[in-house]
Length: 90
Length: 117
Figure 1 (tube, helix red, strand yellow):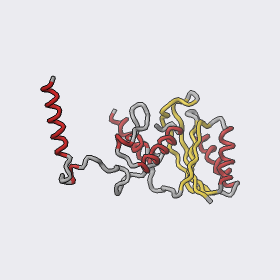
Figure 2: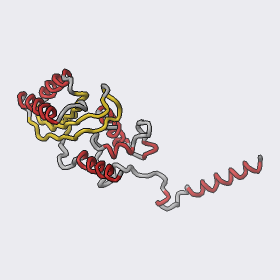
Figure 3: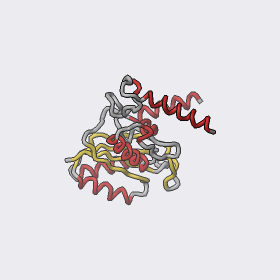
């Protein structure tokens, strides 16, 4: 058991080294929002193909922490998904 | 004057003739209350994702309306009584997206898939 613990600690340390201030930008672990980039598709209740990407298999809305959608776009998404549900499109 | 997008779903067993009558009936109501129908789209018979009043399919008609709020009041009043309709939805928009047609393309894709099968 003690051996394992030391192994864990080593693992943590190596992770910590990765997150130093001097790391290059490409190791940023936060992705940008896929809907607010340039040339992104318009969020609309008629655009079912897009909305289906942000809905789970059971028809629930996926949280933005999984999909990396920005707050503003997530609000638009949830509104248009609910509209599409009312029209039985989703 | 406001811009509205208005969608109605008719029962699955309405004939194309009856659908035309419906579109005429509702565009007449719009004109009666000083509104203007900019565009009508017929999305065709689509599968509903859940059953509404024992219907598995529904034919969708989409209006783009320019007018005052009273037009929408009168439209929804008469639509809520209509037995041929299943649902209706009105959305106020700032701009019409007249160039993008989401449902025309999709139907073509579905046809292609059915050919493959």
